[in-house]
Length: 107
Image (tube, rainbow, N blue to C red; front, side):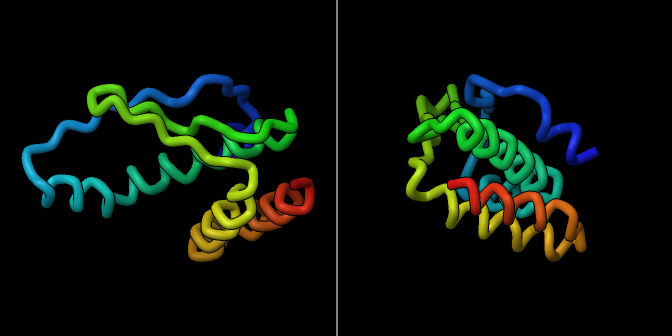
């Protein structure tokens, strides 16, 4: 399933709205497995597309209610992909780890 998600085309940053009352709400959101998985999967999809298209940067997310766009320069693709690999190692998804390793070699 993860492979199918990554193979989809993506050209615009994902729109996100984050609604919170205080900093503890943000901490709870950041620690939710569903949120972490979403961020990692969507980031990987965007970075993979940017690498394949030879882009120098990628817009990952647009948190529109905060007027915040999360961008990543190509020079940082490798370090972010290494961090994403750690997630997949914890998930014991070694097929994805190999796929990410191939992406790192393409940078």
